[in-house]
Image (cartoon, rainbow, N blue to C red):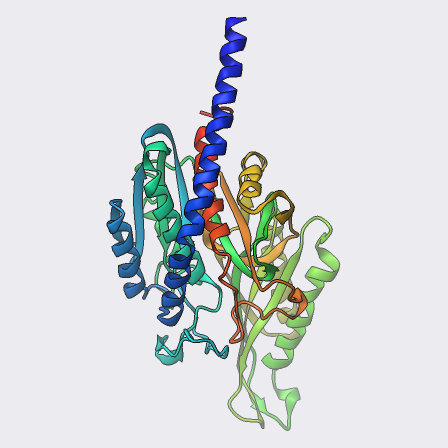
Length: 433
């Protein structure tokens, strides 16, 4: 009987504490919202490309140091990592935000519009936060502020990861989450669980969406080099035409999706985005180069598709008498949400946004290098709404476009979500040791 009473008392204590923490988080997140919006707009107006986020890192580090956190800079080139050691024993929880912008011109007429230009692969390009990473940084800065004020009640340690180059490092440089992991960001102290979010221009503000299991696709970049035989354009019978062969390969690759892959099991996307060949309109060239991307949501299917692409391109080339070389480079893994972690932590998201505002979502064929953190600890990545209330999601401007736009008036929902995840993961009496 005494044991039962002790268990009941413990459960009641946890419930009271949870309600108290939830109220504090809600109050503090609302209070910090004007600062979060200010930070986000500053970052939006001063974007920096992948592996070049120098001023962004300085801006973040200055804020984190002002909170009294242990701050490390220069991680994975320009990344910032900070530790907040709570006043109670508990796990190590990592929260991640990406920092980089894109070589995209901004067309949206807003007071904090970006007019920045920078060098990218030898060219001068416009720079814009066209994927919302500025909001991710601001949310995590706000989260750090709220949690620093609740330090004595935090169970365990919070690791704040501000990551560069999520969009991919330029050229042959290393960068992004793979380099963060390589440099030990998930160790010392070892992370028990990692959480991340992404703003969405097509989900209404105040809402959160997620998917257990495979949530976002892997991203592979491929190139197919075709070597034929050059000839005059008036005498194609003297050639082995790499352009015709290339078009046949492109068509054949699509049959991998439409006729060879079980897309009921998981989606597959093969896109050829570049086709280089020739210098004159009356010369059949010797060579052609195809470049594209592969998206899969299952690791076994990913390997299978790779093999089918190699076989298909090579055999089409053989039939034409051309030499074909295929190269496939994996950029990101499947972003996989640990099902047990999702089940346990969805109530935390519901506390942050409201039960009716949290829902599941379908596969996303976009990719995220957050996937690499999931190779080191259970991971949970979710989407936060950035679309104005009442807008049509079918007409929302897409990510990576000049018209990309988000409503930043409810970024505090992201702050509340992160904070709630930290407390609930650490104080949940059923948390696995």
